[in-house]
Length: 167
Image (cartoon, rainbow, N blue to C red; front, side):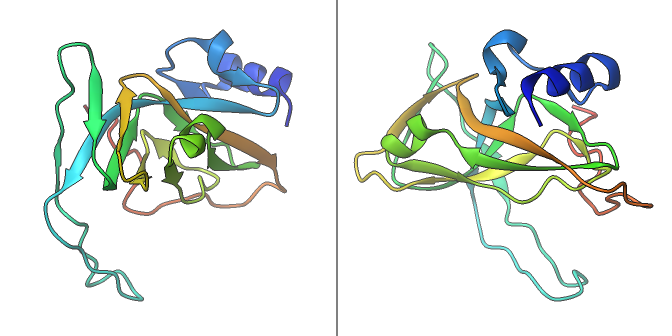
């Protein structure tokens, strides 16, 4: 999907809202998501087959310094994006770390944005650089790429539907 089609979906269907700067974030084949918050892990989680015993690892927000910089040591963090995405039933999206993140020894691990999903997503930030990394609030960290699919009859209806929309 090209930038013209993405822009149309943003303007007409609210594919993405809450962005910092449309012109900067809109890319030839995707859209750069920006850093809204970083959460530190406070304990472990559990994953099972049916999700009956699923437990999401507890987190707490980290605070940036007075100039909105997060100084992160090597390790894993949860990042929350500024943007809210609203995926129609005929699209799926995947995100990849921006190359600047990779060149600085950090990557963002993501899941699929399913057709029908709506919310302010979070992803796993992995800081591999033994010297850490500094990230400024609103930094562009991943590029979300959209793929046309045959429309599905029913969209995403899991526990993350409409996540962080009440904040």
